[in-house]
Length: 603
Image (cartoon, rainbow, N blue to C red; front, side, top):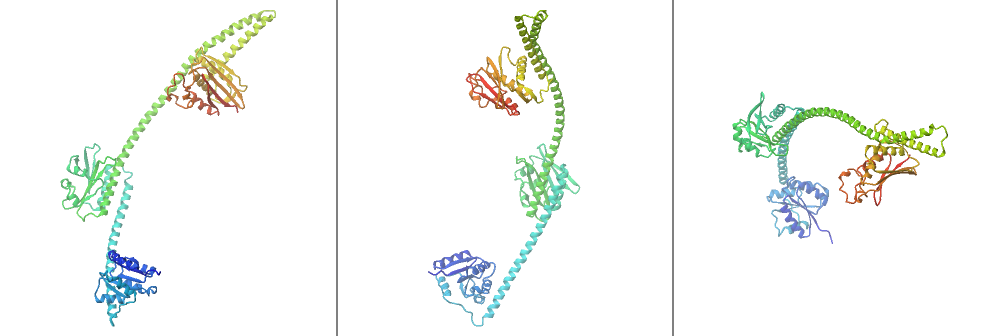
């Protein structure tokens, strides 16, 4: 089966094209369409159709010019060109034939004979010029080409004139925008309201040739609007406008940023009030711009009025007025805000100086109070220590007296008396050790030793001293039984004694939470680890609290059950203190009471 015959229709009227397409497609032809002459030429070269149906009245090139252009291309030498046009004059038919068309079909086309007309041309039919008519047809075509060129020239001249006008407006707008940008940079450092108003209004009046220009803005009290008018001598105050003034009430109803000019102002309710305030001249071109607050409350912040006797306002002039007014609005609000911030900053600076002085005085008072509290605490501690030293000193006095009696006898003591001597010496040595521990602990607590500096510590000695000191300070009840099982062969740790004193104090506090009958402090070492445990036989810990036993803010945990108890408040502090030593803290499960184990590396 052969391919369908390809036909290109160059027609600017879509309705005519749809009719041609429907008729010829039903007849089995392959249809293509171009709405312009130049587009049609491009399609013709690309498709190489068997027939081109060419409308004469096209928007860019005429059909005669398209036919001439197509006939100049050798690749389209065998393509038929049939003109479709409503022009039925004899010279139109002759012009079509002389420019290269092979036939002529008049518009409107007749649907009943159109397909037959096309097939006749495809079958070999050709229209011919009458003998001797070629020169007349060529002259007619030349005249049409000249007329077309004249029309295009006039259109080009008109387009060029409009382009020059637009270019002039763009240059004027560009210059105005440049001056506006320069103005915005100049008024950034300004803080005075009058200076900002004068700069902006003066440039706006110069750029647009205003005869009258006035700006009203809401007073800080919010009770009325105050205005300033631009005059050759500078800014002049205008009468204030109360909130119920007709001009204010009418402007309040306008949308922010909307620019009213000319007849829109004269036909509005603000025209007569503005005339009464001398804001506009009766025969001038008025202008009004409302300004809304930028705080989000959509309140009328102010408005600008102007007029001029020259020509009416151009759209770009109204845009320029809106930009100047927006710049004025922002600059005035920012200047007020910066002034307020500077005043607030100065007030804060003064307050800060006062606070700083008060803080220094408070620190001095706190330091003095701390010294006083420390003296008071140490005084009480010394009193308790003195009472606890009475027992060892009494033992020293009694045993030394008994021992002196034996030492004064001239004969060698008997064997049974030697045992008594050794017992007395043991009592004396134990009392001396106890006194020595109490004194060292007291000196460390009073700050007479470098308790805040790292050093090599004997933890067994430290634990014994802290136990004595804790009892003397009243942190352990007098009747509370504490058993020491210090079995670690190695107890030397490089650290700060105050850290381990705090840890032991937190562990005793934890054990006392359960109301124990006995507290056991035991130590062990091995595999490079030193371990010590504090165990009590008091109430067991509520299982709901075990997972969070070492987390901070223990006071925020719920109350324990009737049979359980909460972990000690200081366990989280133990974790923080031992992190610096690479140590760990854990609570070992027990049916009754509690056992807390601490592991420390010995290296």
